[in-house]
Length: 253
Image (cartoon, rainbow, N blue to C red; front, side):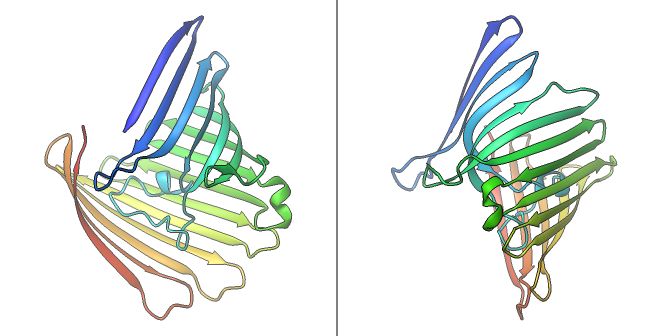
């Protein structure tokens, strides 16, 4: 459940807010999800909030394929909860710069001192979308994180959309990790087919973590779809692969 509100403040300025809640229906518990408030004007858009920061290369690199997603923390980095303050500067010729400071959270409490900073450059015009960002982990340099660089892009060919993503994690005293992703999605009438192939390599570990995602989406209407998805993954050094499949009926409203 998402509640949104906005107000025109005049003078070209606007304020908007969003709060999400999760209710699974099989019990009485409700929990908070993402919450943000934004002020926009000629300076750009300033946002503060608490949200789930997803995998940074999967969105564009996955090319919109209707798959599980390999952001499981092994094949590709998983999502994390953060508090964030972000300034998005005004877009120019398709380019937008984002300046961010983040603070990881654990159980709703600050856990990383607010010393994570990130600069991101996004481009979007016509069939091409691209993103590159650099993150510094401040005083965490001596622990399990130092810096991270991510880049991803997608290109819509009309008959198909292709994407790629790359992430380089310098983890300070811990083992470094590199991640790669290639994706493609192909629309065919009411159906959308897609595949993602990903791998990651941890310094000092023999072999790569590997994964393949396959998926098909069939649209019964503009708001109702059926998904058929299959995923196989293999951790570095593992003898056997792990696989799973899912059939999903999705209704938007």
